[in-house]
Length: 412
Image (cartoon, rainbow, N blue to C red):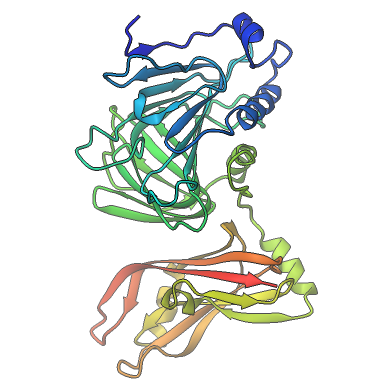
């Protein structure tokens, strides 16, 4: 056997005799999922920065050149990510039973002064990853840059998500930079990635926000939305990302159970408009919160009253005439989230005064209602996508733009 490659072929008998694993009774898809996640939670808790943990059968690892010994053949084994050249997981097989699961903790672009803060990656099912951190010619920490492919449409039950990679960034550390299949992803919170050679890389946002860049094209993605980037047979990006579109709620829910074992619990985004509408109808008080001020005061924490329903006003843009604004507002897409969960009931869109005395333009305001905030810290975010841009001058010139308002609030 090549010392640079260790093929992990652990049979069920050996697994049952020598260490933890799925039992013969765990042959149903739901049982395989629950048992696998329980094993990851119990065996991988000591995984440190830039380390990988063998979560569940079966995995195949290939070592970097010069690494002569890489013991990674039993659930609970932990190795350094820098020693991994490639890692391949097995898709779910109820007959064996098996379902490959691996947990990685990465530094990415987090500073050395925050050793306890890491990017968490959970690889599940039919996934193959190749470490590209040391072959791109750029400066990356271990596995900050990688290529991967995954199965798609291969879930065997409602409890099991399709094969792919869940990536979660630490809260309060801003955007984390990753390079996936030659696509630059700036991620703040939680995403589920899939990649099919000759088809596309799919970036699904469960929480927070991301920007996805390839071939001089950039898309901003909000929670509950998805963008795809075409990739060639070698898994490299071959075109710019597509505009965001909603992720099917069933697809989001199938990944939600995986999140419970990650550092921060995430609730899969759902359509909460009806729930919010009911709460608005029964609310005793409704207060106005101006999200448009947030980008101008970075780091400020706004104090709000807990357990009250709020109207969030956002600033969609500036136009020379009200007619310009009314014509453009149909193109303006605004997404409002609370703690990464879609949480907006649209109330209205209308002029509220001049943008600036110098141009006499009209400022328009969009209003959303969010449900009562529980006590504690929250993040309210409004993302505006303006394909037509804002009109600044009498000659009608404009620029397409994306405006992001992120507010940190404390409710008590």
